[in-house]
Image (cartoon, rainbow, N blue to C red; front, top):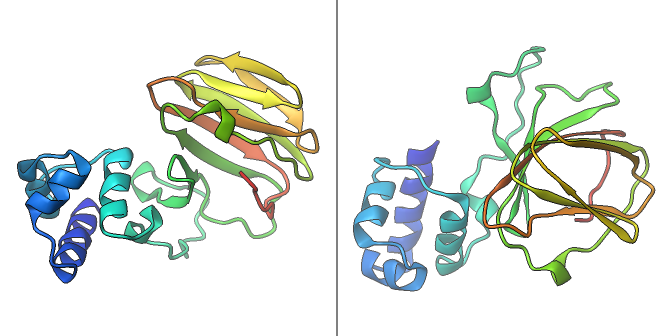
Length: 189
């Protein structure tokens, strides 16, 4: 998958008549790194990929395959997990199931990239309930007018009709296991 992203970047870059030097100057990433990434020789952090996307005038989601996994197996291997959705270039959703048909729970892995400004986080609400478990980092859980700092191993379980959201005010990526009902929820993060 990574080499396909690199190939897509090279294709877009050449269509826009941009050199590696041009992209390097706009993103702050080295020419050598960009060259290696385009050839599939290295991986990239999502925030760096977002910088490249902005230079190439595409949304970050452009680089990820949005086709639904047609596999109806009950087991989802870690190497089969794909990015499902990216919100505001800093919240990355991965489904942790192959099949949501006739299911009531929606299990996801959420990554929240560092240093989201406090004023950008707006609480929202939806039907159902939500459970979160912090795998890595320190997340700020916003519930109505209160904020809670949750650390690795901490969890929270709440009614989703209460205004809520999560934020990452640190310089490290936060990883959360999130399970909510109903599965058909439309988030407004």
